[in-house]
Image 1 (cartoon, rainbow, N blue to C red):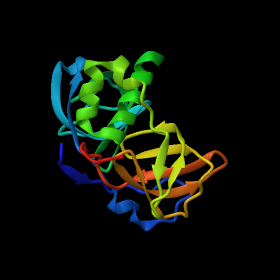
Image 2 (image 1 turned 90 degrees about the vertical axis):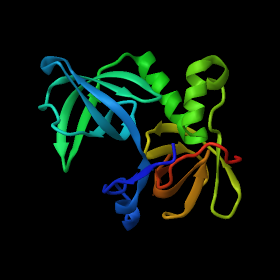
Image 3 (image 1 turned 180 degrees about the vertical axis):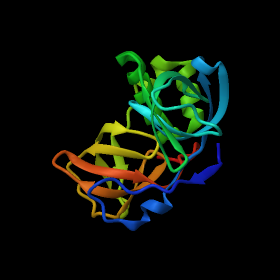
Image 4 (image 1 turned 120 degrees about the vertical axis):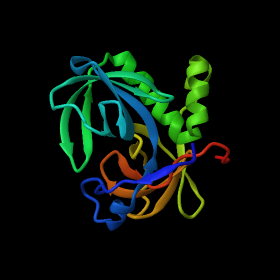
Length: 201
């Protein structure tokens, strides 16, 4: 992978951290097929979660259009266009729970190991899917137990007893992020460095 792009988006609700506008996310390439127009567009996936995606492409389709998104390394997703803001087209996925679960696994592996891990997971899903992220490394080097409640290319919600200070940088798998919110279950983390294979956990 290796290529990154800066995305001008705000940090998660509840965060006063101004670094959100400097957030860096992984750049994934894909194709957007618009059946009603019988055309396929090259696109860049700005964000990806189990519920949908944010993409950038030239001449985007109209809102409320049915589309099929192909994300390199992640597969095919049926969806509907829902919004277009500042050059980013929002998609809401229309897929079954099993497909959402697979995408959730893919995203966790991506954060943990990078794209090579996702490729391996697709080759042998049973072997790789058993491993889950169960801890993160705090800024002081200590390790805290956690489980993932929600995850996307750009952020994660962690269930944990640990409460690193807002703005503290943690390492989740091979991906760095900063703590943007505390809540009853744990913390919200915003990623600011793309995951990369080859780092030791």
